[in-house]
Amino acid sequence: MQDQCRSCSPQEKDLTGDRSQERFNIKSVFASSKMQWVLVLLCVLLPLTCLCESGLTDKGLLFPKPSANSYVKLTPLKPLNLEAFTLCMRLSVDPNVVSKEARETILFAYRTPDHDELNVWQEKGNISLYLRSSSEGAFYAVPLLSIFRTDLCVTWESSTGLTAVWVDGRRSTLQVYRKNHKVQSGGAVILGQDPDSFVGKFDENQSFVGEISGVNMWDYVLTGCQIKQFIELGLGPEPKVLKWKTMQYEVHGNVLVVEEKYK
Image (cartoon, rainbow, N blue to C red; front, side):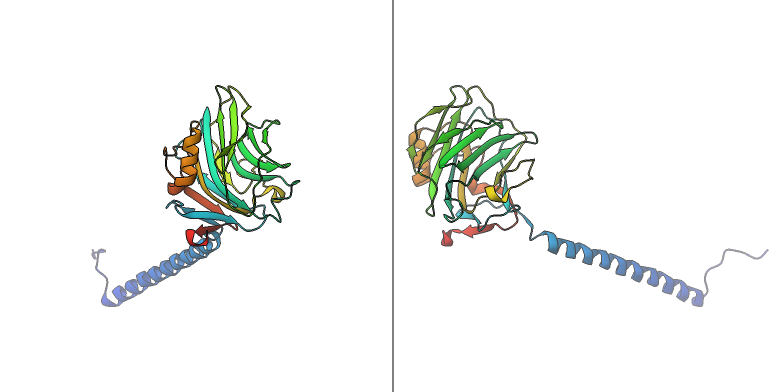
């Protein structure tokens, strides 16, 4: 019986090699084509969303015009499960847009999937604070934001309900607001927009237009001396909830990260 197991002839080996090379080339072309599509997709998506993890030391965020899709999402150092807080930020606005007394402008938004947990607004000639979708806010007839930078802080304490707004180191009259309330965790911190759903349903007419920097948050109420020191000298207790210098953030839409030389 003739042995059916035999080795390929030299000619057959060449044909086998050619077929293998052909299959290799086809796979290479296919892989290259897939890679090109991936690169094209990245080129399209990267300008829309930028994840930056280097912090915002000596930087600010510029929102140049009203929009329904430009915002910055901040990543807190810890969950916003709060029974008290101090929130500070430095803001300046486009007076042709934001300084109109009738306009509602969001300054800071924190929303969970179900509720607006913590919002700060400039509206109706006031700076206002809203906790947990309350129809009633705490309103402060303090000097409004302008084209010049303003250091704005908001303090609130659940056990007493005592709430205040600080403008350039000066405190407003205290109010009692949402006593025994608790801010819930599991939400998203948004600058530039008021989300009517979880990071969505933005309204251009309520968007922030101007510059924001120095957003810091503590899980307790700072003393007046500590607030003034932090605003004027950058000294005092380290922020444990939001820390601008080491902030992780996502930029969406038309928002510019501005270096200190332009500030």
